[in-house]
Length: 516
Image 1: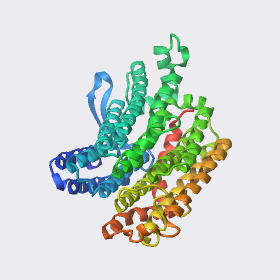
Image 2: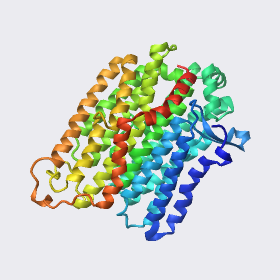
Image 3: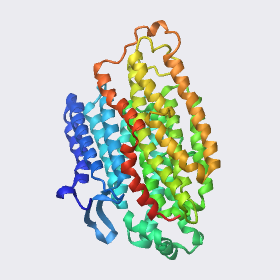
Image 4: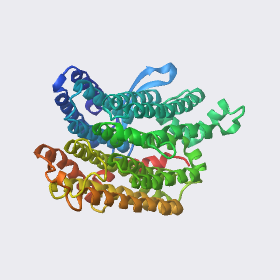
C-alpha cells in the first residue's frame, strides 16, 4: 500500500496516541491506569490494522513523507513493512500487558502510567521512522521514561541499576550518532532507503571513503563506521560483552517495567541491526562475520549458563533473555555470507531471517508473560522471588502453576508452543551457513532446558511448605488477563504461518536488496 491508507496518517496517529494518553494520565490521579488501559487498547487495535495493511510484496507501505529540514537531509518519513509492523504490534501488546500487570502501583500512578505511555510512543516512533534523525529522536526518547521508571519505582538498588542502564545505552547511542554523522557528511542523506540503495550499488563506500578515507584510518573508514553502529545496537540487544547492565536493570525495575524492557525495548537493537546495520554495512559485517558469530555463540551459551547460576527468579529470566536474543544475533550474523549467494544459501538465509523476526515476537510475548507471573508471585509472597523460597505451589495454586508452566515451556522451546518455531527456523537456516556456530549454540538449548525444568521443579513441585499451604491461586481478573496471552502462545506455535505469511515477503525483499 503506497502513501497513507485512505489519506489517513495511521503511523503518525499511533505514535501521537500514547503521548496524548500520557498527558491525560498524568493529571488523572487514581484513574491513570484506566486512562492507560483505554489508550493501550486503542493502540493495539490500530497496530493490528497497520499489520493487516502491510504490502504483500514485502516493500515499505503506509508511507508518510514530508519535508522537515531539507538542508540537513531531514525528512518526516514514516513507513512499515512486515518487520516494522510486527514490532509495532508487539510493542502495543507488551505495553497492554504491562499496564494490566501494574494494577498495584499506588505511588504517583499518574506519573508512572504517563511514563509507560511515553515509552510506548518511543517504541512506535523507532519502529516506523525511515529517516535517521527522526528515528534517533525516538530511539533516545524511549530511554528517558525507562530510566525514570527504574529510578523511581524500582527495588532497593534501583539507583545504580538505572544509572548503569542509562550510561551503557547512552554510550551505544553516541557510537551510533558519530557513525551516522560521518555517513551524512559524506552523502548528504539520512534516508535509510536511499543509503541502503547506495550501499547495494557500492556508491556508499565510495563516497564515504572519498570524503573520510585519508589519515590514520585510511581506507578502512567503512569498517570503523560499521563497528560503531554494531556497538550501538550490541548494547541495546544486548550482546556479550555489552550485556552487564541488563541483569541489574531487569532485577531492580518493577516487574511491569521489566516486561517493557525485555518484551519490546530489547527488540529495538535487533530491529536496528536489520533495518540499518545489514542494509548499509552488509559487506563490512560479512568481513568480520567470524568474530561476530563467536560473540553470538558466547551470548547464547553464556546467557544460559549464567541463568543456571542464579537464585533470584528475575535474574534467571534476565540472563535467559540474553540467551534467547543471542539466537537472533546468531541468525543475523550467519546470513552475512560474503561473495554472493546461490539458491541453497538463499534458502538458508531466508529461513534464518524468518526465524529471527519470529523469535523477536515470540521472545517478547513469552518473556513479558513470565515477568508478569513473577509480579504475581511477589505480591502473594510479600516480595519473595528466590528460586529456593518456594516449593509445591502446584497443589494450592494449580491454575497459576499450569499457566506459568506453559509460559516456561514456551521459553524452553517446546514444540507446539510459540517459542519452538522461531528457534527451529534459526537453526534450520544457520546450520548450512555456519555449522560450527550452530553446533556450539545447541549447548544453549540444552542448558536452557535444564534451567527451566529446575525452576518448575523447585517452585511448583515437591512437598508444600506450611507457609505456602494457602498460597492464593489466580483470581478471575488475572485469569482473564492471562488467557489471551497463553492462547496466543499456542496459536503461533500451531499456526506460525499467521506471522510468517506476512513476514516472508519482507524477508525476500530485504535479502534481494542487501549486499554482502
